Image 1 (cartoon, rainbow, N blue to C red):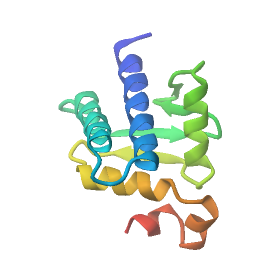
Image 2 (cartoon, rainbow, N blue to C red):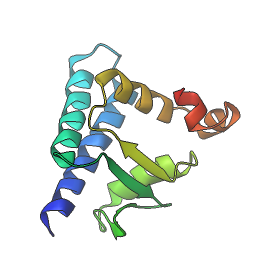
Image 3 (cartoon, rainbow, N blue to C red):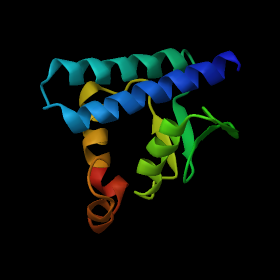
Image 4 (cartoon, rainbow, N blue to C red):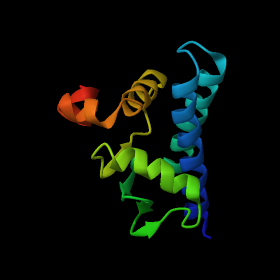
Amino acid sequence: MGTTAKKNVELLIELSKAYKAVQFYPEEHPALTAAIRSAIECIKTNAGDGDDISFLVTRSAFEYNGEVVGKNNNSFALFAKEFFSRNISTIFFMKDVTDEEMTNFFQILSQDPKSIRKAGGIEAALL
């Protein structure tokens, strides 16, 4: 596994942790803050001086530049399903994302897929 692939695996692990923390902890809890900040730092590290980071989302995987990230990782398949079931086919993470933006994103993602669709989709919910 190359350096980029390892970094993407690490990033998805941190994003998954942050998503779970948003679902479990109250908004001001230190564990939630730590998980969100860890995910953001991982995004900044992966982006480096380059562009923002994006993943294609399929029913059971995340892809980066046409390659499945963490191909044999079942937790990634479940995480991808969370996005896919909410009609999210691509996710972009800007390297200057804030704690508040990341928390809001995962709070919205935690909502029932039907509620998100009823509200006009994930994009409408984010605005």
